[in-house]
Amino acid sequence: MNIIRIEQYDLCVPFLRPFQTSYGQTTTKEASIYVLHDESGAIGLGELDALVHPDYIEEYLATARETVAQYFIPRLLHHDWQHPSDIEQLFADVQGNWMAKSALETAAWDCYARSQQQPLYSLLGGVKRPIPVGISLGIQADSIHLLKRVEEAVSNGYTRIKVKIKPGYDYQPLKAIRTAYPTLTLMADANSAYQGTNDWQVFEQLDTLQLAMIEQPFGVRDFVGHAQLQQALKTPICLDESIRSVEDVQTAAALNSCQAINLKIPRVGGLTAALAILKAANDADMLVWLGGMYELGVGRACNLHFSARSELTFPGDLSASNRYFQSDVVTPTAKLSHGTLTIPGKAGIGVSFEPKEWQTNYRVFS
Ligand code: OSB
Ligand code: MG
Image: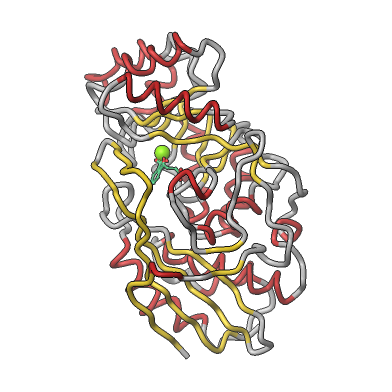
């Protein structure tokens, strides 16, 4: 394959409702979609999902766009490659910058799959099936509002509820949900908001609520702190921000820092890396499930295809388009049916891209 032209669409799409986490509120999804054009006429779509601020991980949207333009587009353009798993090596001399890498690497997979007239899931070793999905709920004004959101999500069919927590908003709201829904698959995500032993009491309380897991209580590099906490709890700890590579999985496994991993394709640099991490985590007997970055339709379609892998049985953070957006930038959009989403069946990621009125900037590289 030989990519001869790359289009970059910068987008700003309003959320239906603001999303609040331990580090602040988000009211719009800003992202870029890259469209690769192969010399044979095949196209490939990839989404850049770095957040606007460097608070989830160090990478953020403005620098990620710059890194794609300065480092990754020049490596990919007019370079002959055989298979999309070659792209990881093409980008390997650049450290980190996982989301920037992922934007083009996932686009190369889509382009290759379209040129082979194959749906992406089959190239990834998945089997088409309805994908059971969960929902991630932001921090709400109080437990009453939160319970309303949970009730809505359950009646819409979501089969697993994740609730963002922060110090002062943790045990009480989760206890309220557990009391109202004794058997719901429920979990908490702290996004690194707690600090070591000072905060253990909260986790001992959360440990009484039969949560499916507690995601990323402590800082990104705190494999030791997570291991100490895991030893004190029955509830599995899940690492998200901490895991960027197979080496991180091995560190977590050696120290017993967690029993589960939230795997996000953008956070690990793309699909080839995600497949390697899936295998490493399975070899270490960890539960792996697919996380999200409030993706637009391109990223969501890619996530759905990856979710066809048989290892991914726990419902991912993979909601319908209308969970976040009034209107998405792809057709077909993802619709929920009995708690599941359908993998788009056509070649590649199976969706077409329409920037609509959300485009803020446009660049072409050739
Ligand atoms: O911590 O899982 C997280 C979104 C952006 C960045 C980090 C996280 C999240 C979510 C939302 O929880 C998941 C989704 O619905 O896409
Ligand atoms: Mg998380």
